[in-house]
View (cartoon, rainbow, N blue to C red):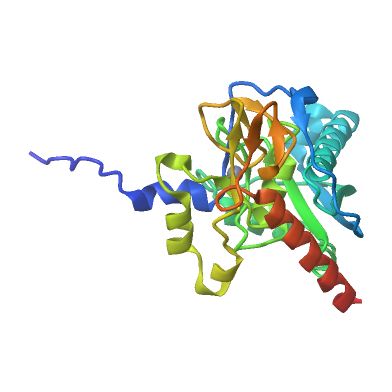
Length: 278
Ligand SMILES: [Zn+2]
């Protein structure tokens, strides 16, 4: 008689979803921004970023071009509101829209499989032109992610690529772009210390991009944009920041939850890269 060994859940297994930066499906979202107290932002040059969207044929035929454009516009608007509220000198702009055949034969494809398929079916010069510009990103929209996943990134595989589910909320785009700037979930995500696992599993070449302050936060029973806490469902259009308050509660802290600072630093590095890229 054969025996099936018991499944052992180790902390190593818990990191897998964190590393691929999944965005889980919430029960509901709601903006209640009227009690947000925002800081006075420093006056500085704003860097523009562009996102090109690659829509799988099945999403295209299910929703149609005008509905897809409406969803993209709503996501871009929410992204810009979040950046502005958080004093991040960066803005998002939607770029070109493409329709792509994303028929993947693999069972449970991972982020790399989606990206490989996209590269296979797209004219190579299109992706090359995007990746040569440091302020450009490419977002793939599909309808076959697991039901509870709204978006995916892997900043170490490709810092300009993200996947969105057709079920994505208007917050998901900026959440995934946040990951590409090395902003992470609230530190207690996945029932464990995120910092420890990020440190352990981040390639050495990228360790200097991790900062203890680049974590999400929950304030007044609400989540900042990178928070993944399953306890709080209401979402705010802000990155965590000790300078932002909801009512009397601060929405971040200097040491452990200042994703707004992480994004500001990212935006400034991006501005420098673009000056050197010209
Ligand atoms: Zn995430």
